[in-house]
Image (cartoon, rainbow, N blue to C red):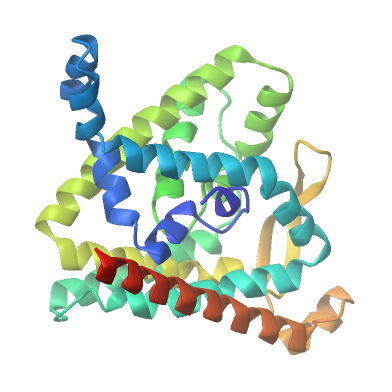
Length: 296
């Protein structure tokens, strides 16, 4: 999840979905409520820890932090120097994942089918949307944090991509570099508020409309495939915190058109190999998950 969250276009929520921890993650975050605060204020640490599923949350957070510290830099370099192969790996990962996730829908009904189609359409429309200019006032910084964290939790579109889309990526990066504490604090509060809000919404929806929500979230993953398509023509750039240019707005092109459009090698065989590797990783994760469940 940590690796995915630093790549514009890949969501940590997608990785949680692929690895089968998504619902437990959402439910655990949802338990961070007023009741858990009361337990903490009364120093009932054991009850608090059990209520929020502390072991699980700490393990996930530790994994995210570890990857951000040790692996994310390597992934960004791979994305910079080997973009086609890197995107191909994630494309294969997601293509193999959503059919496995759809197996959770035991019986397709009109509601589930509609949820899947709506998810595909919404995610696709986001991937082809052009960035917009937005105000830099404090309220919108709060809103940007809330929206970006929701995208990070939902499968399909990443929070970084949403920040790029609403024109706040550069602004937030600059605030971090310049230690603008007001902007950082408001953005963080927005993230926390959005995380708590989306977890409550998803928990309620998964409890009452489980099949429809699974179909909708799977649709998000399918619709967002356009964003991880390996062959792209960049239309607009932004500068990240390291001074490197990253794509803000681009569009998918066919591999046989890639050379004429960009002047670069489409690396078709390498891309196919990396897609196959992504598929293999999902198959291995699925087998490991089944074995662990059998042991329990």
